[in-house]
Length: 286
Image 1 (tube, rainbow, N blue to C red):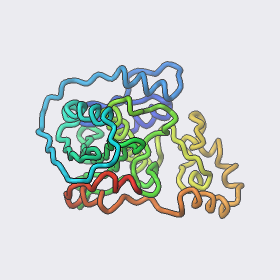
Image 2: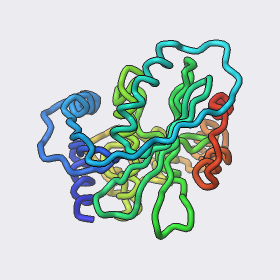
Image 3: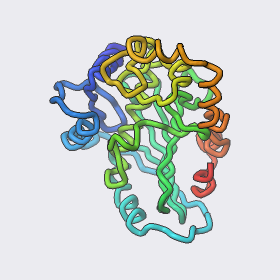
């Protein structure tokens, strides 16, 4: 787990690792210049070079029947469909389901070389604006009887979908490629692996509510207030614990609707029981 430790230390210093074909993450070999987080993501994407994969696996494309929505963006549909070849090359074994409303991808990331733990991502890519892409992560491991959902930290309420970045930090937008988004999901899963193995989330994170910080953050993690240089214990913890915890819990429940983060049963069935994905519009209603 030496590489996992090194990657965690680099993320704490705002140094981002490289994601290779198959979702294999390796430590960065260079230190980034002084810049904001969003700018660094942009530069990392531009510099990332991918070797031609030494192996190929046929993708399995399937089509499911769903009633078409009233408005489909021809731009998004054309853009995403043109990217399928690159996705299948970069993430071998990708499964694709086509629907009138969009498409579904199932991809696998190996995360670290010579490790049995892998991450599976089921990603809904709608063609309809303003729906946004959603994805769910699951662990795949020979030691697990069946795939397990990755969460609940840094997942969305209430459907447990991946929350890998703040929309305002410009880490990814619809102008960027799906491969880049899958790379971000891969790094999100690696952070979860680090959390499980070392007991702390590595790198910058955003946790807006004090109650969530108090109940989820480790003292040695970077503070969720957005401060990328101070640990939680040194930054907001004293202020957070001085607040009325019951009042802060009520405030947080008002934001989340008192819900828990749980993936929809239809999503779990795709991963565990190998069923076809549901209609995208059904999932987007969560």
